[in-house]
Length: 387
Image (cartoon, rainbow, N blue to C red):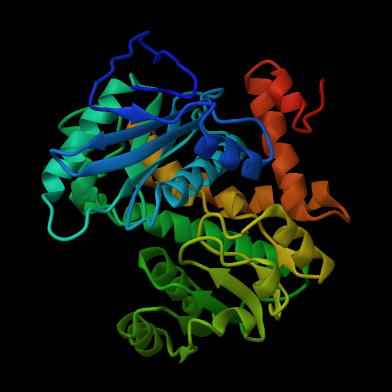
C-alpha cells in the first residue's frame, strides 16, 4: 500500500496489501491537488484498487490531531482519478474543520468510491472497502455519505469496527440532525439581521433526505419555500407537501429570497453563480458549497451573509460520532446540535467586518493547532504561534 505519509493506527498496527496502489507526495496528481488546497498537505492518502470486487477508492486522512479521522464514504460515478481525489481531499479537509469547531474528539477524513459501471455486487464492494478500512488500523472511521446507505455501512461493519453504522431504525437520524443544525443556523442568521423566519422566503436547492427534512422544519415555522431538484418527482413531492413553488435547478441560485439553502452536492457557488445570488443569507446542508475561498469573499463583498457549511451542517456528524462512541441519548444529541446557534453567533462576533468564512477557517485552525501542540505546519497556514 503506497502512502502519502506512513502513520500507525491508535493500536500501533498497520497492514498492507499488494493489491493496493497509492498516491505519494511526488506524484503530479497529488501535487496539483495539494496546490489547490493552498495549505498543508493531508497526513495520508491511499488509493485502493481491487479488481475482483470492483473497488476503486481513495481514502484521504487529513488530520488525526484530535483523534481518528472521522468522515464519510461516498459512492459516485467519478469521471477521473483527479475528480475523485479532489473530492476526497476537500471533503477530508472540511471534516477536520467541522469536527474541530464542534469540539468532537475526532480528526477529519473522507473516502470516495468510484461507482462501477453496470451491474455490480454491492455487498462485496463494501465488504472489500471494509477490509481496506480495517487495514488502516483505526486512523480512519467511516460513515455513510452521498450514494451510500446504512446497509452499506453494516456490510463494512462486518469487516471492521472502524465504522459508524446506524441501525436501520435510526438510519434517518443523520440527515435529520443535519437539517436541524442548519435550521438552527438559519434562525440565528435571520435574527442577526433583525428578520423573522415566519414569512421569510427560503430557496432550497436539493431535495434529498436532509433537504426534505429542512423543508418540513421551515414550513412548520411559517417560511415560504422555493424548491428545486434535478429529479422532477422530488420537486413535485416537495411542492405538494410544503406548498412550495418549484424552480428550475439552473435558476434556483438566482431567485430573490431571504435565505438560499444549498442542499445538493458541492461547488455550487463559484465566481459566475455568486454574481447572480439574490439572497440575504446562504446556509444549507451541502458540503463544500464554495468552489474556492474567493467565492466566500465575493459573497461577503456583495453583502450576502454566508454561514460556512462545515460550521452549520455538523448535526449529522455529531449524531454518528456519538453513536460510534456509544455516548449520550438522542435527546442529548439534539441539545448538542442546538449549540450550532451559539457557534454561529460567536462566529459573527469574531468575524467583525471580515468574511465569516475566513474567520471560521482561522477559528478551526486555532483549535487544530492547540490539539497538535502548535504544529508549525498549521502556524504557517495562518494560525497564531501562541494563544
